[in-house]
Amino acid sequence: MAKKTREELLADFENDLVRIDSMRLSISGHDEPLVYDRDMEDMPQRLHFILPENSTYRLTLKYKVKKQPLRNLTYKQVVTKGGIPVKSKKWPIKELSDVNIHDEEEHHEVTFPEDDIPGGLMFRGTHPATSVLYAEGQEVWKMDWLIEVVKKNRKPAKGGYD
Image (cartoon, rainbow, N blue to C red; front, side):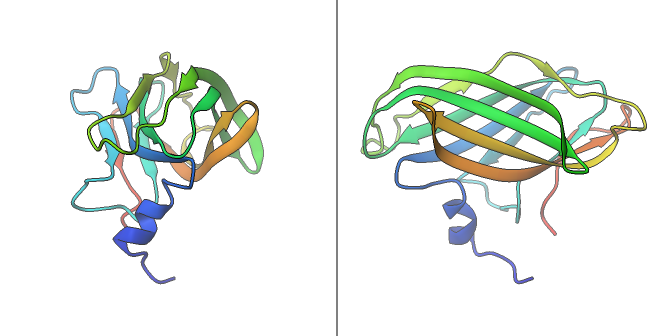
């Protein structure tokens, strides 16, 4: 498979309604968060987070609303193993997210409640995950990515560069 260009990679994080500027995972006990950012010098070919089992993290999402205000914005994340959902969560983001694409510095930001990474031999490995933003119950953005659960003595890292 041919490598995606920077423009193709960035297009995965944007559509007519919303643009995701960054996703940051802050992992308890580790100083450096894992960050996907539109301004990254070295862009991974896919979003892939490598996390130690039994760790706790907070996800922060920074986004811009492009054409029209989005109402009742929610975020849903599903992690699967063998095609079966093993972890699913849905969090409210904001009742009204105003348009802010015209000002490059302006954005919306939300940090979700702390969550945990399961552990044990059965959960270690690479799992497909999906993140979806909904406005008024309608899907407005969707991203498939990978979460890799490793032994707890390993450091968190970003993958997806291959």
